[in-house]
Structure formats: C-alpha cells, structure tokens
Length: 157
Image 1 (cartoon, rainbow, N blue to C red):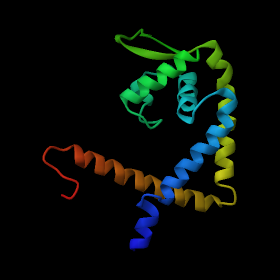
Image 2 (image 1 turned 45 degrees about the vertical axis):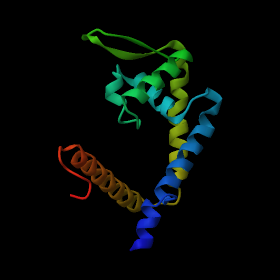
Image 3 (image 1 turned 135 degrees about the vertical axis):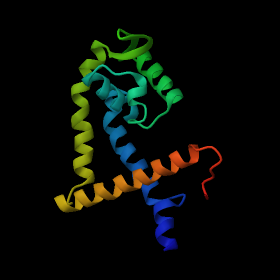
C-alpha cells in the first residue's frame, strides 16, 4: 500500500504530474492568445454571465489575493475590467471588454480539444468511474480542509 500512496501523493506523484502536464497542454494551445489556463477559464466564465470575483475564485483554483492578481493581469491586457456591481455598490463584477469577447469563442475548443485527447480511448463506463473516483478524492480533500478550519483541531485528530 505504501507504493500506492507514494504514487498518488508523493512529491512527484501521478496527480501532480497529471496536473502539470494538463496545464502545459492547455497553455501551449493558449499561447497565441497570451493567456494562462486560469486567465482563460476566468475569461470564459465572465464571458458567459455577470460574475463577481468571489464567485469564480474557487472554481479556477485561486484565493482572493490570487484573483486580484489575475484580474490585474487581464485588465492590463485590456480583456476585462472591474465595474461596480449594480446590485451591491460595495462589490465589483467582472466585465469582459470587446477585446476579451473576441477571444472567448476560441477558448471552449481549446479546453475541449485537450479534454478529448486526455480521455482518448476511454469507454463511457471508465470515464464515469474515473469521475466518481476523482469526485470522491475532492470531497475527501474538502473534508480535510473543513476539519482543519475547526478551532482546536489538528490534522491527526
């Protein structure tokens, strides 16, 4: 069992390797647009609906500070702007500029093409099983995070 855990969770774990290789594959295809995978995901989400930064931060794998940096970079590129939320003037929403809107239609084919390549040769049952397993892993990590946030609790308890 130790070898299995090392494969799944060790420093050079399969999960870490897959994450890096997936990000690299996506970002290679995004290079002509000068976007990272997180920037493209944010642009895509904001292009679909009025979005507050806090609504999408977790979905794209960042926190508040990371979201601020991400928006700063996209604003410098002229792809988004922050505007006052008309429903709550204390907050902002992300507005995609015309330049950003011109890029948005190119993003789903990039993400979709990489996904198709990633799962090439898998049966529908295998994909369903893989998704169930990864969903369970994510839930376990969320439980761990929630447990760690409780006062007086340690990881070992």
